[in-house]
Image 1: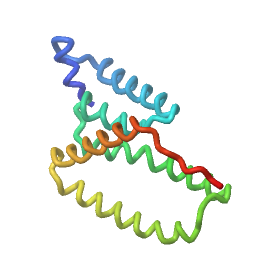
Image 2 (image 1 turned 45 degrees about the horizontal axis):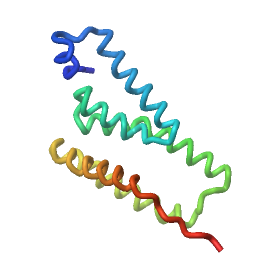
Image 3 (image 1 turned 120 degrees about the horizontal axis):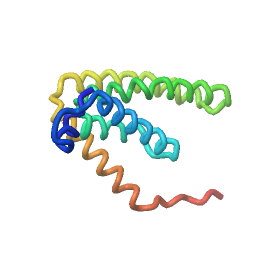
Length: 140
């Protein structure tokens, strides 16, 4: 993994130790923040693309690779607890699979620069939405 942007700060070549310590520390920091409820995957995407010089597609693939086992474990736990609405699940899964396949096809056929813009807009809108508290309806 190249940490080219940090070599400018240090004024030369990046040592092998720095080449793995910086990604490790970024991953550790993102995991701690995600334990507090902050989206660790989103943070890692930003770190990988902005600081570690990983292209957007590769960063999204790495993020997905780590997300899928977590989602599978959550699905099993929710199923065991009886928290799944099976009729909704049966109608949602085919649509979700189709959307995932379409999204993967679009992502592999678009230029990386084009992928970064909608992701940036998504992050911006997500951040702005956190500034305003949501009104919750009182249950009767």
